[in-house]
Amino acid sequence: MSSVNAQGLRLIRGGRPIVDGIDFAAGATGTVAVIGPNGAGKSTFLKILAGLEPDHAGTVTIGGRDLQSLTGRERAAALGYVPQNFVPHWDITPRMLVEMGAERLPGFGPDAVGKALADGELTDLADRRWSGLSGGERARGLMAAVEVTDPPVLIADEPGASLDIRHRIDLVRSFAERGKTRLVIVALHEIELATTWFDRVVVIDKGRVAADMAAGDLVETDVLARVFQVAFETVSVDGITVARPASGRPV
Image 1 (cartoon, helix red, strand yellow):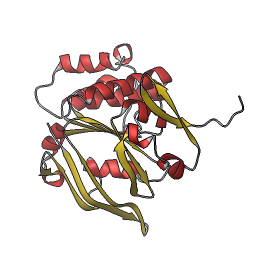
Image 2 (cartoon, one colour):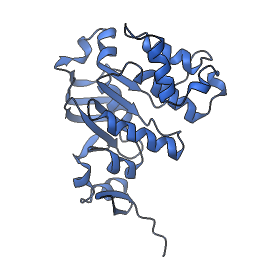
Image 3 (tube, helix red, strand yellow):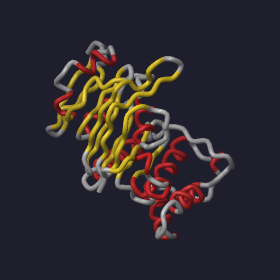
Image 4 (cartoon, helix red, strand yellow):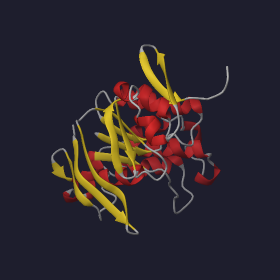
């Protein structure tokens, strides 16, 4: 069980702050959606939490330990990271990718690989070359490669961007289930999915946290309209108040 704590995160590129003084803390369980406009700093923020942006100011601890002090194996045991984009150096298969994910930690054999492929509906595609997969199939392969070790902390950057609507909903449902026993931090653009399936929403704008609150509380504020500069409406679905962009179309 691993909590995450970040203090004073700041990263500057080309003289411009990409992440500008972010503090963040999350317990060992729960689901956190990270949303914001394009270029707001979401991806960089997640990379810092995953230990992939070493040139930042501020500190990140996981389970009370400084992330930068962990060995590669310790980091692999503590967290899994799903990137927004992945271009392999050679034409691998989903099975090879998941096997490489499993090899990060001892004790994960063929059974774990087979289960991860099955959970991602990749069994029939397991030995197809990467170049022959659709964007959605590749995204499911990436998720399987990270989830095969069942990390205590899962960090994912736009993991559903290439998925069709069924697989996208299945994915956020799996995040909601996983959040009961693990910590899940996900950047995504779908405001409706964020406010439906996630316990907490962090809104990032211009490198800073514009809001950090329970999804049910966020939808009652003007934060979304102010940050995204579009009108939002709320609807009630099974007792949950969900925010979505207002269509503006006449009825």
